[in-house]
Length: 104
Image (cartoon, rainbow, N blue to C red; front, side, top):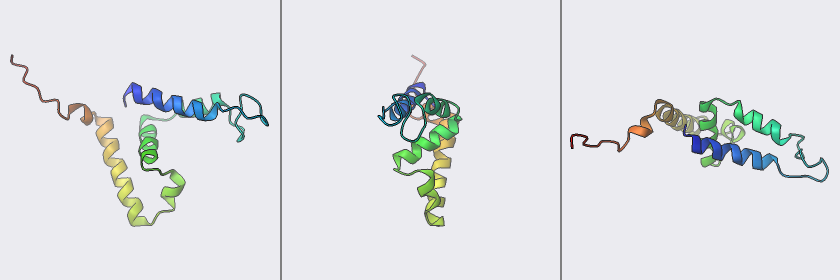
């Protein structure tokens, strides 16, 4: 995973949970989760978990909605996620289009 996309995701999570709520105070969201707790939860995820979350977000899905899908549709999405995970974790995205003549 690239550091830029990781920082973007962390910033998104921190911003989501840093929203001030008058009922619970400036550091806690209505759910009772502080911005620091949200950040730590995100920081403790493995690269594979982060990639999976990003892919589901791009598809406008979450784990709960994925679990509620019919088995054939869920299987197709899980296959897409597995292929993307493999591609990103093995670094194949870095090699695409990288054929260059270095003899000059």
